[in-house]
Length: 161
Image (cartoon, rainbow, N blue to C red; front, top):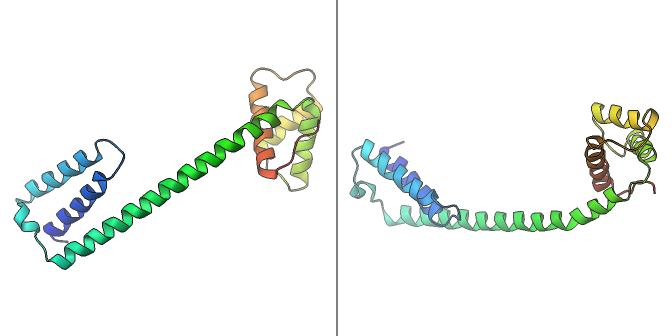
C-alpha cells in the first residue's frame, strides 16, 4: 500500500470522525493524518487523485454514515424496549412470597428444560429449597432475586404466589 493510500484511508477516518458524536474523534483523526504525512514527507498536493476516486470515497463515506445512523437508531430502539420491560421484572421480584417454593419452582423449570441454571445457581436454589429456614440474608436476597428475574424474563412465566 502506498503512502498516499494510507493517508487517504486516514482522511476517510477523519471524514467519519467529523460526523461523529464523540468529542475529540475528529481532532485525533486530524492529528493522525498530519503525523503520518509528516513521517512520510508528504504534502496535501501528494494526495490529489482523480475525481472518480474521490466520488467513490465520498459515496462510501455517505453509506457508512447512513449505516452508522441506522445502527444507532436500532440501539436506541432496543434500549427503549429494555427499559420498558424493567418495571415488569421489578414487579416479578416483589411478588416472591415464599422463597422455598420459588426455589423449588425454578429447579422444576430447570428439570423440564425450560430454564438454564449454572451449577452454582442449582446448588444455591437447592440449599434454599431443602435446607434454608427463615428469610434470606441481605446478601442472598439480591442474588436470589436476580436469578428469579432472569428466568422469568426468559421464560415469560411467573413464580408461584
